Length: 351
Image (tube, rainbow, N blue to C red; front, side):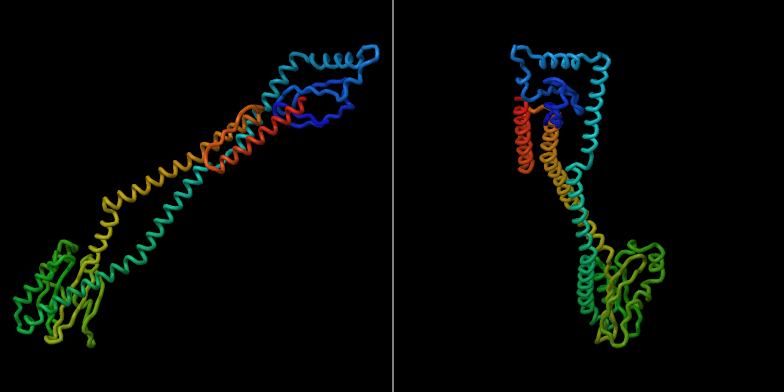
């Protein structure tokens, strides 16, 4: 005979042939609820004369069972309370783990890191190449214009005009220096834009000795080469130099542009107040959306878990509300059907 506890729904298989009398009672091992078992077909115990010996015997047995010692009852109640508490602790331990919010935060962090890594990869792979191309084009354009302006003065040995052109070109934004070399390789004019951009030792040397020839020698025009590009460090500054041969006079011009200034401008653009504001808005917007999504999912699940735990402890009259996303609503509906089925099954057993 199958018996189900009304409080915790634990099942027991009882052998009715071993029962003494028509009824027996025992405590559920899980929740401590007192379960009363009725022997099937108890009407057959009546005698023709109206007496009911089995019932009397059953009353005797029941009386014996219903009269435990007070000390034993209190100890049994304490033991059952301890079992219930231990079971609740085990259930709580089984529920430990990472929450949905943690996984959403992990996904958000991975997304931000992936985007940042992709931007960094694009920056280091393509931006330097684009910068180099733009610097070379700019240096080439300035050198070509400069060569055209000093060609005739150099042929006429009009060195004051050459110096004037050198001074004008050297003051252009981004230009580090401008220099003119005659056909004998002598620097006839050379001027730096701002010596404060270079280290103190180099600046003092230029002031004392003039334009240093080794700057020109770092990008020589030899073996019939009419133009040449070179990148090197001068006085602590990375310079892009272009040398262009003057065909008619046999001399050459050299223009050096700052590379570090271009990098600085890019850095300023990337970390400008506007850029930082946009990145901050994106970040905090993502965090806000994360909390909304986490709350919309985790809160209905927490409430559903609480209701299901109470139902598992015997509160079968609770109604499971459907809240949250569609998947959570479907889960709540399934629990509600299960609760109704359990309640109906226990009701049929009571009858």
